[in-house]
Amino acid sequence: MPEELKNIGEEYQRLSKDGFDAVVRSFAEVNKSFQALAAEMTDYSKRAFEDGFRAWEQLLGAKSVGQMIEIQSQYAKKAYDTYVSEMSKLGELYLASARKASKPIEQAATRKVP
Image (cartoon, rainbow, N blue to C red; front, side, top):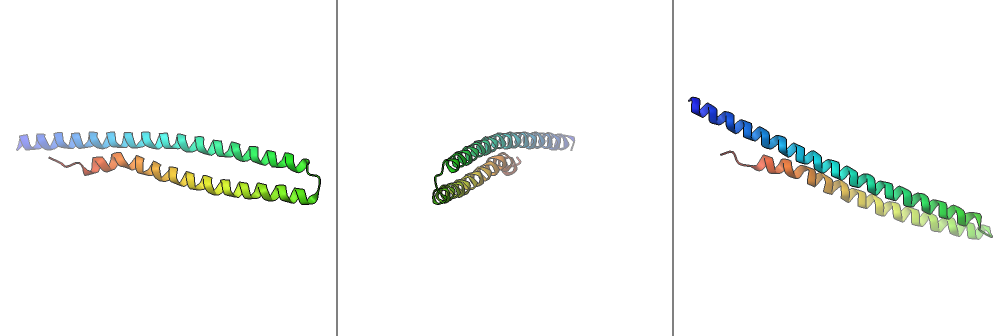
């Protein structure tokens, strides 16, 4: 009986360590993903600002109301298309992040107890 209790204790200790290691790996993946998302959002914000500034400069140089409307229409279309594309990209990054972060925990949970 004492040997069985010792084996149970050792197995519990191993499973606890494996679980802790899985959580640490999972948090590391989440950290990497947040860094990638932050970089992507920073790049998008920078591009959006530059596009808006360029449109403003073009509006200042417009010779007619018609030209102003055309510049504004082109800017609005580009801004919308860029936004939709960026949101799709961010959605994919979030999904990939969730998959990567859950993988170590899934692996630890599916290990068989001897």
